[in-house]
Length: 151
Image (cartoon, rainbow, N blue to C red; front, top):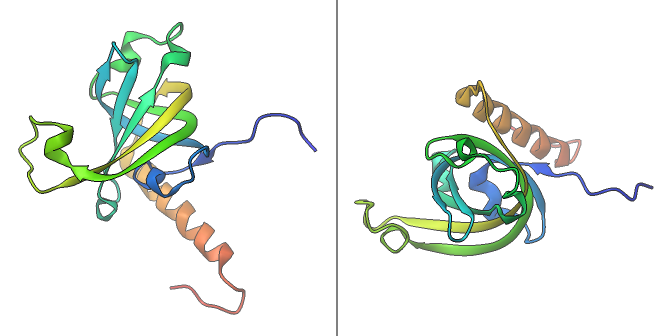
């Protein structure tokens, strides 16, 4: 039996709202904003599209001493390991960002306390997304009864 920290669960940002608060997660997201006042990054990765808009509000206060400006640049893709702190149900996008012209859409917000954050260098987003879907389908198949065929 190990007394070390629990491992993180790799998942898509769009599935964070399906996890339990307190879960340790690892995910990839694109920085859409950074507040120096609250030390909070806003990340998005709308994949798969049918999962809807999920926005991760990542608290980076624990990382401020080592966080570089490149790790807070809008448009930068970053990996995050942290604990899920809250999930807010879908709210109108206009309430999230008044500059966004998409009316009638909703976004779910999730909070994450970051333990680690690093830049996703040499990222092939398509390959990453396919591997995450393949992992998800393998997990679904491994949970299925042995005599059930999953298609």
